[in-house]
Length: 596
Image (tube, rainbow, N blue to C red; front, side):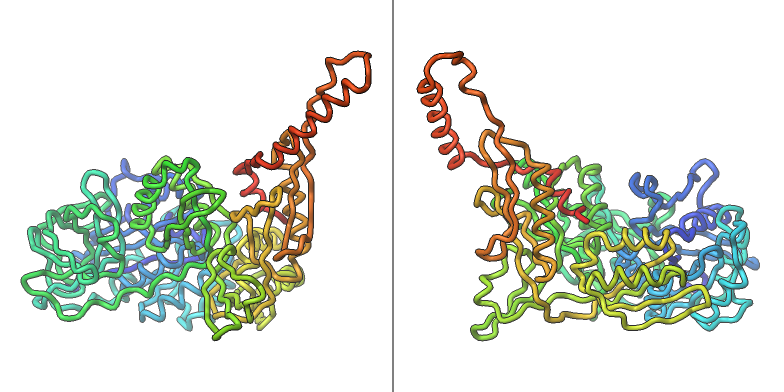
């Protein structure tokens, strides 16, 4: 066990983690030239197209150093704030971390938050200065930032380049020398922690685990402590580029188990695996449960596909433990699911994966966050995940909304514009620190609702891409919130309801009505689109009727003939307005999200 090293790679988005991981795999011979493709570990089409890592990936490498054979288990992690749950799980399975900083960009918000995650778990941090081959690299300046941040010495920082392969040998050497070997007893009862799982349509569910104590052997009868289910270990092994079957996996190592599990809910990330014959007494303290930030409804376009969608969501949840969902129904859209996501990018990725991997076309409703409403009578607390659950305003004492602490690191030129943006979003400046003469860290308390839509895009736009953003929840605060309803011909469309701050309600109502007027197709009767707060209408637009010329066949002749036809049409229109229903196209739901 003294020759095993478990480490992960953490960094901000686009600082070159996956490319550096490729070089490590090549140098140790874990993959051949033929298997190598750019960002080898990003195996999803979506990851390659967008150039981001969505899933953390584990792989085992063998490394010769000073005449000894070492086993290195590497986990490459995502850099986007929406996937920080993946990072926290990877960190829990490791003893060391490579902290990668782009030499041309310096330290950014996500670098700092991932570093704190690693320090909380007492990991050995190895700072790496990546992209040294770029003409814009500023090694001295960025090295000073790293030294300020983690208090290491200049000699501890390894200059490297994922593109040219510079510094890869020093990194592997540092991992062997500086990262401690895993602690654990081979002779103790088996205790292994599940940190990830994937679904294979031929073999059922494959769970990835880290063995903390004991040994797991092929054919053992194992038990999952959380679900209390028992299985036979049909196949176990370690994670190379493909699965590598073994007879046994020992303490300190990372491996996989295939035991013919078919049901997604039988495997929970953070669960403990032990043997039935000699069980361990305590379960491993797993990960804290994920806290979804953004909620949205996902509905099948065709209501008959509901069961298929449930199945698809279950399988996706296996692969992405941060997805939370529960069934719900809507008057406009039928049966679907209320889903919790970690952010807008996460929501977009889930929707895209449903379409690609499971061939499910879905409708997503307006995303929102979860609120707390306190009622006047007996001070009862209601958790509001969906605006349509909000009780009548006369019964509510006050409503609380979730706030986050946002950290923004930017160049000093853009401070004014960023402050204006945050204050528009009801943010409150808490702190402003100059990290260097050029870089500023701003800390704001902002309501989560304001960030859900387009905050990140706007931040990137006004800072010309130089601002980086990270956030963590800080609890609930009281706010003046009202429920904005959208009515079509007097019928409420629950999928378009939103909880908004009282001061913004009028403007938002006006904008949504104007947008819907452009998108809803014209009918043979007038369609009234209204924005309402309670019983009070605050805005209105009308989609004019398409007029059918019923008097075209009367040429000349008495006016009374024409009037008779027009009266008949008028009655028909009146009846049509009573029973005609208005279809809201999918583009309307999406356009409301992109309102400025």
